[in-house]
Image (cartoon, rainbow over all chains, first blue to last red; front, side):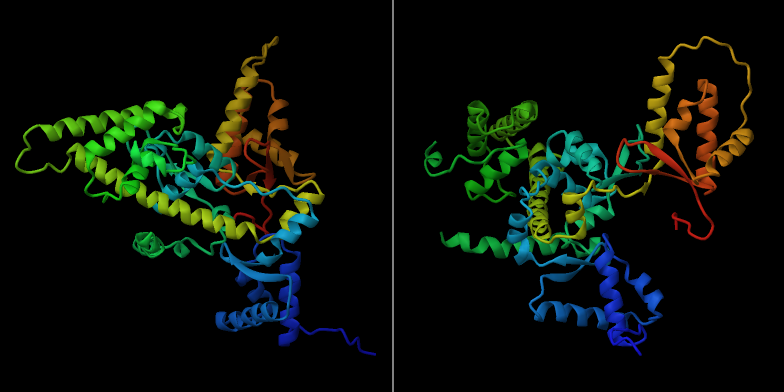
Length: 194
Length: 242
């Protein structure tokens, strides 16, 4: 007798189930190419269709999890609305956030990489060795070489962990400096009428 | 300061640019057209007050104060016809424009950080209930060199009571390391070096390991920063480097 639960990964239902199970057991975002290779899907659009179906399913059916595209891969995460309950349930203290100094340093590295500590310190107006060390330890940045100037200072760049930490798919998702100015101009508008 | 009456004293200024930009915004000035004399007196007020500035950065605050005063004194003197490109006014303006961007990016990153922290991933659960397993990652030669230096320092402080005239060669070490890798496919770099007798031998072994990494016979992985580095044999079918 055939098991009614049996799934064939050549069918769409089977493929969806397979992807879901892969994402379920993976701690890190899974690269789409790996799944595509396994399922013999050659067209990125076909794969995209499957993911969109999954996303829709998670969105519409009152689920607690969702699909997040991050660091060039896909991952299952809980929905943001669950955060407070999860925190309560697992009695987790609030997660630590990056300090302002670290955020500033990271901003410079993200937009000007590769960059030296001297350049970062110059732009921030304060010595930035501390935040750079902290970010290195958190693996949000890495040493990417040496600058070919006297003293051969180390150059720093962002890492994949940086993308994951900020939920970015790749660096191009960061707004350009022009877009940034526009974004903030919009936000600052109401203050004119205060 | 009149304006202090309604200004809430919660802000804390990490650095001079932070404070300067705050003053520019508070006085609704254009970054490109700062009224230096107004800003300078307010800036000095904060510097004297000390309660809102990061005192470990006092030197940086003073540096900027001197720039402000210099610019202010220049403005009292008759101006040259053409403003030079690299005048301190220009430089300060440029620095502030750049810093303004940095602050905006920081704010954006902060928002993104907050949004991402709302999403829980598998990792979080592992972290709570088990000892989180660190992911092994390939280490850079910089990190490897750092570990190497630590070992050298340690060995240097040891006293050697015997004279060993053994010659070491990279070829011999290569075979030795390959043999050691044979049983488990990996080797604790730190422990291995501890078994070696002299700085010479460590040096030869280290160069041998570097050469092996270069030729992709082995890879060095580290669980976290400053953790011991282990050497793994790269297997042909599953090459972690690619």
